[in-house]
Length: 431
Ligand SMILES: [Zn+2]
Image 1 (cartoon, rainbow, N blue to C red):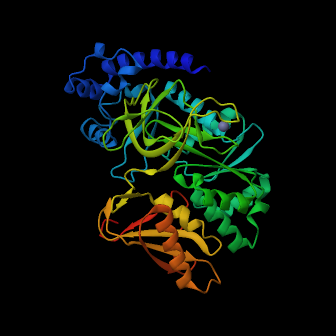
Image 2 (image 1 turned 135 degrees about the vertical axis):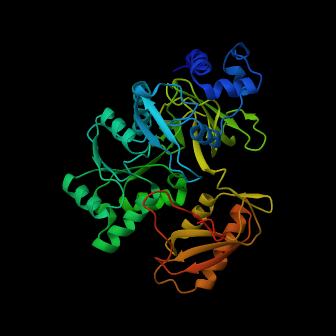
Image 3 (image 1 turned 60 degrees about the horizontal axis):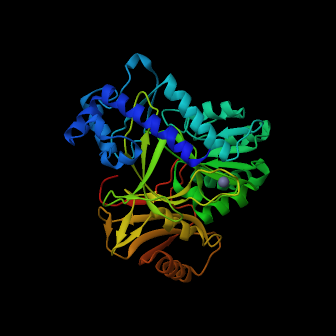
């Protein structure tokens, strides 16, 4: 669609949603009042920056004070047909309710993203992601079926079943986290003595963590399975999968055109950053068609790079890559360090490393005192460990501009994850 025409549709839906939120959401009515904002002050999307941001913590508090779904919820409970929960990595879980209308929109957005990621009618998809609570579960089932592909719900912690079912059903697509795809490759090699490519996956549709866009991890998964890997990005509060990467793998396309308005902001000042090739900032969502749990200027804390130049696939929407979460970010002498970027450097040492790594934090971040301690698994048969250590330290200094103290550890030492990988271990008693 022509960008001007899309903007007109977004504008109309935004104003309608704003009216709805003022009327139905106690949380937003109070929040806007506190800022001295009246409905008439916002005349269109150009006024969006006048609205205050919404933080996840506010939703959590709102839910504690106004159970079950919080004062931000704008639909009566009898219209809520399903409740999901966010993973709760940063605290108490929060619930996200959806109405029938919200469910249909989630299905539409998620299906568009999965379609961009290459899923088609006729594909048989092994779903190796949790089905309970997680928005990457049931909504992905709805969207996969909507495309007309075949959904095989296996879930996590059942790798033998993944192997057996994939072979028996001749499944050709894997939907999982990138961490799980790596885990599965190692699992089939070790337990079945089999080349992972023999499983027959030709499409790996991944998401829920940044790994899929990390070049060395993408390369490893594609080579192991002999597949094309396309990643996606969603948000449990906004929609299950909002961005999907096409076969050209030049960043994930925005797929929620008439449902979500995206902004890019400076994470410290909150200033709006214009979308242009290479612009970097934090992603902010405003839902413009949501009944149950509306969000206005919701800070995702996802740090992204965007591109607006045309993609050979013909999609006109902007693309992005997630660099990491701003709440995972560490600062070493003023230099921003994203754990997923460290993982990329470590993975670039494959086959001399297994690609597995863990950052050890002695005390709470984000400010850390270099050298940053990082455990790295060397691969079987590697002998000159001192040289490997020095080379990784040098590469990190060159590429990410911080000083690391690499501890090389034997293969198989570090924990493997079937969901999102934990790249940082806190040694100061929080876990
Ligand atoms: Zn494209």
